[in-house]
Image 1 (cartoon, helix red, strand yellow):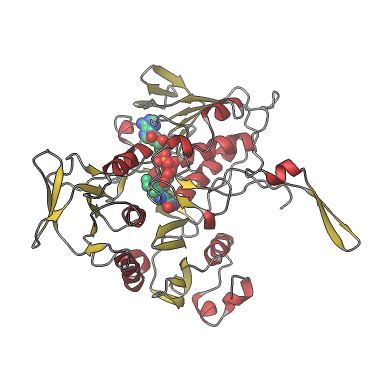
Image 2: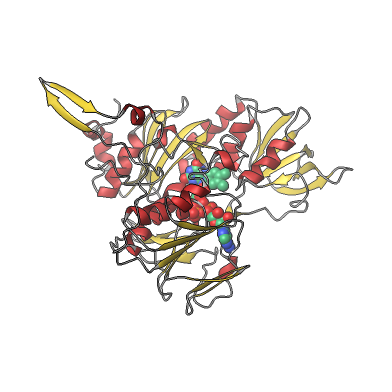
Length: 475
Ligand SMILES: Cc1cc2nc3c(=O)[nH]c(=O)nc-3n(C[C@H](O)[C@H](O)[C@H](O)COP(=O)(O)OP(=O)(O)OC[C@H]3O[C@@H](n4cnc5c(N)ncnc54)[C@H](O)[C@@H]3O)c2cc1C
């Protein structure tokens, strides 16, 4: 409120700050017209302070995604004056997978890749490469893969040689998994992680395209939602669970989401055993085979079947112990134990989750961004343990908001109607709220997020008797 500065991911730009004064019982705000009309808020980048203690240090960031961009911006926000090097496999600057979340709050954000099938990275770069270089003083290595790290020598290996670091931030994200069935690598079978992947989808669309989406979690169903509005012959979703999202959101909500898609012409085959994908005479995917059913026509198959931490380049380094899923366990400052000045954040990090401290690995845009903000503060000399509660949004039929500590639940309370997809759903364990999901009922989830972080969330019993109305929200 005092500075307009950003406090939390996902946005990067702050609010404009203006002088306000009260005259004759009226509030007058003085603001330059140009700024008021500009869409973009104040950019935080500050000139590098020549006398700062960090002037001679170098931070190397591996990964130009959510964790990477937030680390950069937050380092400069915290007056880090040294060098910043960003190395990214992708051939464009960090992108906004969620349209508009750079400038607005979550309620207005829409994922561009899976939610809108955006296939042009230049339209969604957070900052242009020139801005990163000139305003933030970043040395950019795009389309560059890190192949090894030596924590004793403090070096990162890229094709052109080695880069020395004083602090290393690992944020390489995750790699989409293909289910191991015959035909999984045929032309016409795709996964979605980058705009180049999306291009393969948009180029395959047409009046004769039979689309199969395998997987009923977020990426699969978001892509399905976007594809309902595109040209095609048929759109079919194939899942191995009985109902989409059952474990996370419960059976009733899962069924309601499925129905909302069916109402838009999508066919579902759930509880299936997927056997193989076979090719047509042109060598491209043509049919998907499910046990006990006739083969389904499949000229485009999208696998939304999960991701694995992109840590294969660390396998040979004795300084890193990879967990079974390929992730890395870190402490509450997101430091890799035993490796000096090395941090692991975002999709690869198993971090102690507030409030119970149990290790969790979370694949959310916001978590990676806030991890980046935290390690930047630590590197710049103001260390803070990470205490965020994961929050995300999705577009599955309708906008879904979700905040949760991942501790599971043994009781729930529903306020609203699941059938109409207009509700707030509270999940609790031992009476304490562990997660809140909503559709069409903002801003319950964002307020719950803040209350969970502050340890001030009402109990399930209190919410049931209406305590909810004491802390705001609509109705
Ligand atoms: C299509 C899609 C939709 C999604 N929708 C949502 C959503 O609605 N809400 C939500 O909360 N989350 C969503 N997610 C998840 C979210 O994008 C990730 O959790 C988040 O991006 C993780 O941030 P990160 O920094 O860990 O990794 P990323 O953002 O993936 O960035 C990793 C970067 O590291 C690079 N890299 C990897 N290995 C190397 C290497 N060896 N050398 C150099 N560079 C390397 C990659 O190329 C990439 O640039 C979605 C993900 C996808 C793919």
